[in-house]
Image 1 (tube, rainbow, N blue to C red):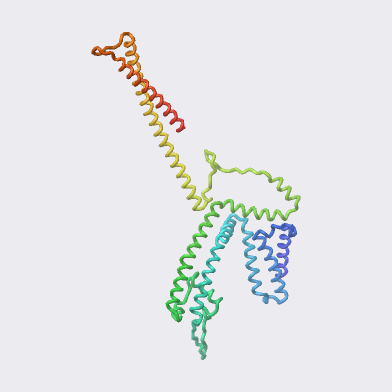
Image 2 (tube, rainbow, N blue to C red; image 1 turned 45 degrees about the vertical axis):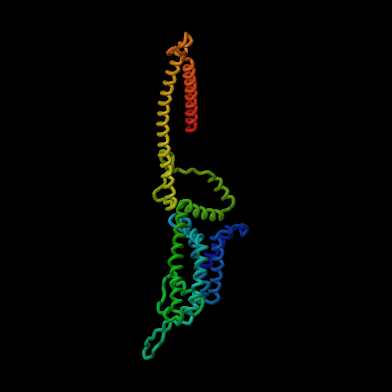
Length: 373
C-alpha cells in the first residue's frame, strides 16, 4: 500500500513538473490550487518516509492530519470541472474571500472574552463525579474549563459560537455579577450580532456568485482544461489552439432577438430584483412619455383652434379697416358734422398691433414645437 501511494504521488508530481514547465513559469504558484498541490506532494512524501522509518501504525499523527487535510482540498480542486459541484466550489472560494476581514474581527473579540473569562473563572475547578469501581470509589474530574489560556479560548468558542456552557461554573466565581455581565455581553455580541452579520455577508456573497452562476461554472471548468492542456506537447497545443480559434454558439432567442434564459439559471436575488426594478422603470418611462405625448397633442389642438379664431378676427378687422379707409379717401366719414379720421387712424393702429401679436404667437408656438421635437 505504501508503494502504491508513492507511485500515485510520483505521478502527480510529474504532472506538476510538466504544468509548471519545470518551475520555469513564474506565475504557476500564484494559483491557490497549485500551492495546495505542491505542499500536498511534499507532505505525502514526508509522511510515507516517516511511516517507512517507524513502521506501519507508528507514523506521526500531526503529519498524517495535515496531509489528509491537504489531500481533501486537492480533491475539491478536481470537483471544479463538474456542473453540479463547480459552482459550489466557486461559492466556497468567494465566501472565504469575503469573510477574511470578519474572521479577524471575530477572533479578536473571542480572544478578548477568553482572557476576561480566564481572569474571572481561572480558579474554578472542573466538575467531578464519584464512581464506584468494584469496591473502590473513583473520582473522575473534568479539566478546568478556564485553567489555561488555550483552554479558555476553546471554552469561549464553545460558549459564544456553539452556545454550550455549564451554568454552575458561573455561580462558583468570586465575582458573580461581573461574570454574568461578561457572559451576557459575550453571547449577545458574538452569538447574536456577529453571527447574524456573518450570515448576511455569506448570503450577499452567494448572491453575487449566483448572478453569474453559468460563467463561474464554466470558468472553473476552463481553468481545469487549461491546466491539463499544459501537459500536452507544445506542437499539439498549438494545433488545438489553431483548430479552436473560432467557435459558433446556437442560442435560443425570442421574436425581438433577446436571448431566452432557462428557468434553472437562477441569477441571484439581488440581480433578479435589479432586473425587476429596471423593467418597472422602463414601463414607467413609457407611461410618462405616452401621457406627455397626449398632453402635447391636446395642447396643439387647442392652440390651432385659438390661432384660427384670432386669424378670423384679424381678417374681419382688416376688411373693415380697408372699407373705412376707402370711404375716408372718397370724402371722409362725418359723424354729427365731425371728421372721424383720427378714429380711423386709431383703429388702423390697433389692427397693426393685433397682426404683430398674432405673428409673435405663431413664432412662439413654432419654437415650442421645435423644443418638443
